[in-house]
Image 1 (cartoon, one colour):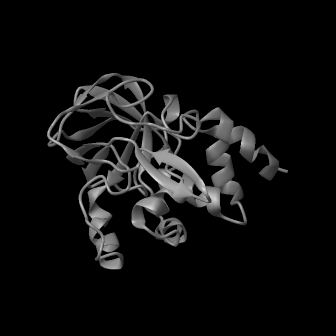
Image 2: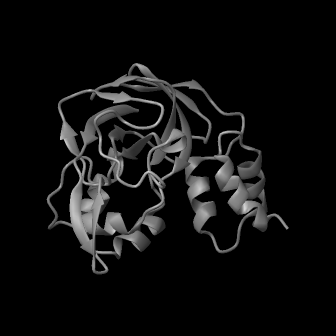
Length: 211
């Protein structure tokens, strides 16, 4: 896996249900390296600290491999890397292969796969239609957030190298499928609940499915 683009953005103001809001999802390529801190990407814009940033969502990665798929669906948009709000666009990132808890060397940083991205209405704001949310869920390639174990700089061209694979086989894609499945797989729930890297608040929300 290799970093194709480093992306950051400024706050963008928009109208939603009669109210004025701001979002940091409008990210664009930068020629600069990004410094990954424990809670976010330095100099990037994070508006909603409840749902973005923090230990388990310090940096968002999205695969470059699926850009052509989305460009075909939305050919009239002005396309560039960072379109999905990702800080790092990564070539070769496959959610069906990376495990929650996997540890990677990423530039000078050391990161751990924590959880997939859940789309919200702000992705619809960027794509100029809320139908993107259902399409994004169905496509089943949401990208992934990472926890920063060791802070450091990441540059375009840096390799994402597996340092330690999680013994728990629960993948980022299975995490995503579990969140949106009406019927929760008992096998996936078992992997989910026993995976030490799954955020505790997520486990607390899913306890109701264990009975």
